[in-house]
Amino acid sequence: MDWKTFQALLSGVNKYSTAFGRIWLSVVFVFRVMVYVVAAERVWGDEQKDFDCNTKQPGCPNVCYDHFFPISHIRLWALQLIFISCPSFMVVMHVAYRDDRERKHKAKFGDNSKLYNNTGKKHGGLWWTYLISLFVKTGIEIAFLYILHRIYDSFYLPRLVKCEEAPCPNQVDCYIGHPTEKKVFTYFMVGASALCIVLNLCEILYLISKRIVQVAKKIKRRNRNVALQHDDYANDNFNNFNMTLPKRVLEDKPPSFNSVCKPLSRLEVLGMDPKIRASAPNLSLS
Image (tube, rainbow, N blue to C red):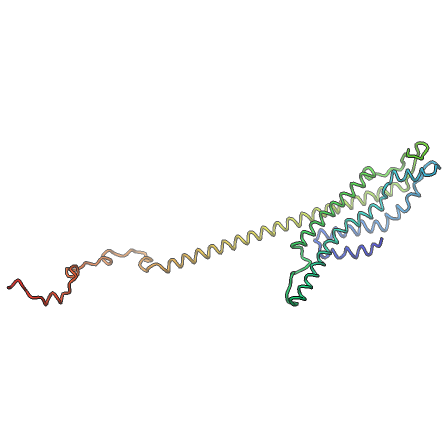
């Protein structure tokens, strides 16, 4: 396996990751890939040659080795590293899809037109892709830990195993090569895998809590704008109402009764003009 190519592919995910994602990537490379390449492969090597049984019966050592080691540790860890890296490539592919859409959009509407402010920013569909990739990585880690625990009985490697499988003539004692060293590396790789699970869970909680805070701020800002618009509308109606009222209604003191109801003279009551009344003859003298 070309681990340099593997590292180059995963390095592209680093710039789209959060702080927890960068720590996860460092743990994968330093504590898992480097340990796997430098030490683990040499410790295991061709472990079937180091599996010795106290019989010369043809086929018995092979059958016993297959019974106790159905999947080699080193090959299982290689599969695990490949599988946990595949969800990260989903994020890279989604960003590449966004870049392609952005390029087509600029080619159609001009360079000044933008479809995305930042194609690598985790919002919209990319946020969901990133979150799903974290869930998938966590599930893969847990699944491989369960497989290793199920096959090797709590990650324990004994020095001596007893085999009764055919074609062994009777109960055969078989010895594992470098059992203590293999046990130490097994616990180390299991601990690194558990640390990666914790980092994935922390990143999931971080992304969800951050999104909840953003949504809460957005709702609060929207409610504040609605309240300000409502206050402005109420103030405008109040001012318009004051402008339409007559001036005497806006005064502090009510108008007096005499200013409203002036005393009327007799002529005003009768509706007659005093000039016309003066020109009439005096009939009482006649």
